[in-house]
Image (cartoon, rainbow, N blue to C red; front, top):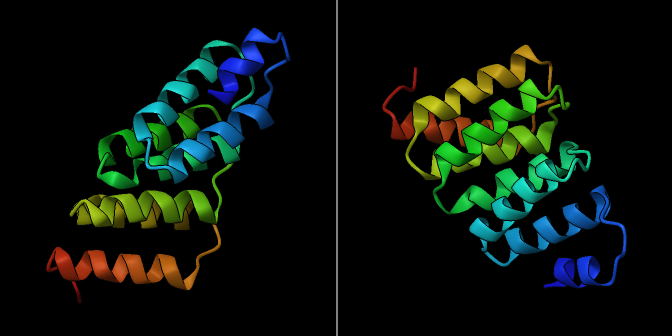
Length: 136
């Protein structure tokens, strides 16, 4: 609704405006609205940055792991820099969806891209191994 008001009042929509609105949708559990805004942002030519992708991936936390992986792939394709939040969010989405192989794959991608790890990421990776019976 806030974004609609900006459009109707002819205010310039920028990366910060979109990111804040996508993040608000994510926090409200409105993943579909968050992804609609993400798509509108991309179509309007507004720059997609790391924060944009992080918010959109986090919005997929409700089990939309395929959409999270699509966003992760698009992020790489668009040459937007991955960071700890990106990887943590994507791994968490997959781990919570029971997609342990995908979570572990993302952990590998994170290491390949020399993204700094965190205890939360390592914990999610261990959880994924346990759930996938791949702990060694």
